[in-house]
Image (cartoon, rainbow, N blue to C red):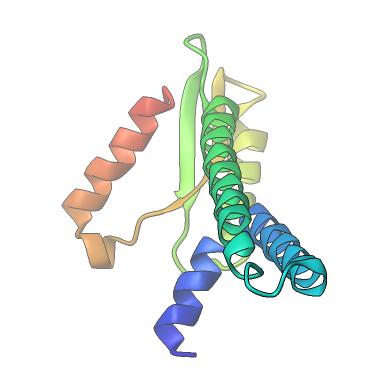
Length: 150
């Protein structure tokens, strides 16, 4: 399998999407075994088509619903109230396990929570200014902050 296809599949099918896709493939395989073992000889493959489309369609709908739910959940978790001042720390490029981000958020919260109404939160998105350019990365970061009331 080509490398670009492996990279694409690993991006699309990770986490919950991988579980949904695996369940769909198992359902399709199980149905195929059942039909091929019990169905009439001339109609075996025709009877596979519609259920395969239904299973694949349900998997796609489940993935889309999960995506929409996770985006809504991420926004509600990170959204800052009007009464507080928000500092949003985006992911740091090259920090694979987000340890630098966690340390930064933890340290700022320890210093700021005792004396002020400033809340610091981590956000998963990373902006690489070497690829986007400093100005574009800054504008995108400001846009994310405005959406979350930071």
